[in-house]
Length: 230
Image 1 (cartoon, rainbow, N blue to C red):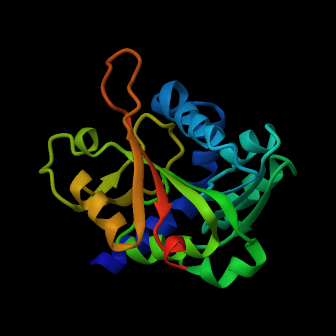
Image 2: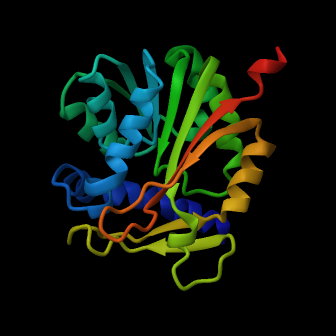
Image 3: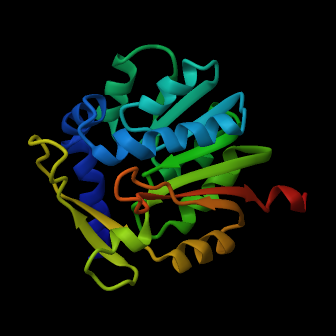
């Protein structure tokens, strides 16, 4: 069943590529428009990097925003249609079709980065292999930024425990054709996963909706413990 979920997750990003591109570029998603886009952009800029890798870059909005500010941005995504959309938007950044598991094998071509970004990109299970792979493309002293759904808000009325859920994209636009399975994690599970895969939490933020003042996302800055071991 888990394999089926993972396959459906990957297929959803192929089938929904055009719909997702339109939703992002036309700013249909309130949480992104009001809170989370600015939160991740500001978090990256505060680190003052020269090179950034956007892992799960989608249609490339963050790479474009960073490139406009003079940062060398590279985006990778397993969805070829999304990478095509990113490339078509302009040459400011560079993009590559690359699944998370493929990152170590492409490390020589990609080079190393001072900041790695996973912005609403870690919906799979298991995630440990992905987090392990990210060490391979990080510079000494580099940082990993993750923004994900806030566990306490995303659990809604369901039990607060790890497990597969389904995103229907309701309210994001009418062109989404494939629901997306995604794996819900509690805060405890996220922190345990980081410790297991050699990442140390530097800080944690909870960006708030300006009207409800409820947390919209979970934003985490991590450093690699592998680099300090020589």
